[in-house]
Image (cartoon, rainbow, N blue to C red; front, side):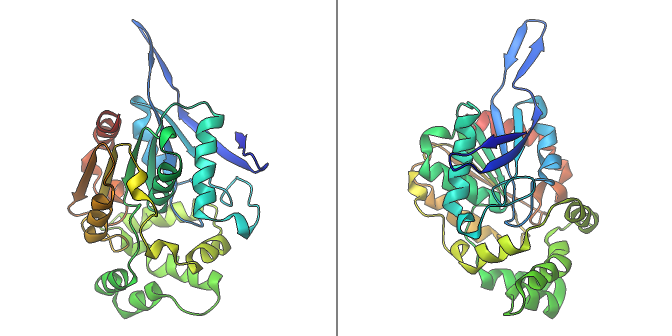
Length: 287
């Protein structure tokens, strides 16, 4: 399905579970969770696994951000954080959703937080799952050196070569190392094969180095925020998640949960967390 933005761009979205559940006592109306995928440069394919266990507690949607997947690519001038955040706000408004919870994974956490800084009245809560904090090249390169040696450190540090080749090499060398479970690399590789990639979009965004700085205006976020991160995450180490928590000075409630034994994909690395139980924490804790 598609929803059209004010400038004519179409965003693809998918409803994974209904808002109303028919019970013996009547219809139970449930809150809405919008899955905001990571990247940039990869679509919402992997979000299906993350969001599936949430269907028994909420209406769950996922969508492809502008330039990604089935959504309109448009032009590089529109591949900006503000535009992605405003698209999310328009999606909420156009679909008539009332204060949904935004579940942003990785880069999607930053999009969700930016949306809440620009449109605080639309957002009921945020779950920033291994995302939303600024990046730190030094911490990340050293983490990949520990995990994969000098080649992984070199690729993590980047180069001045062809952007598309660099991104492909990062996916081949570094991406399998972000998971700390033996089954993780195979699962991540499968998600990569099934997903639609936009390496040029990734290169355009990362060249701006915006994510080296905190999300601007975090003090404007007023809704509750749950921050969920892996203690062994090489992309967003715990100090960066703590920094994010401390910057959310106006939020009604901020909770930081750092998960032992988990790298970047927390739910994949720690299936014993029971995503369904965590989901209830999202719905109950941020509403």
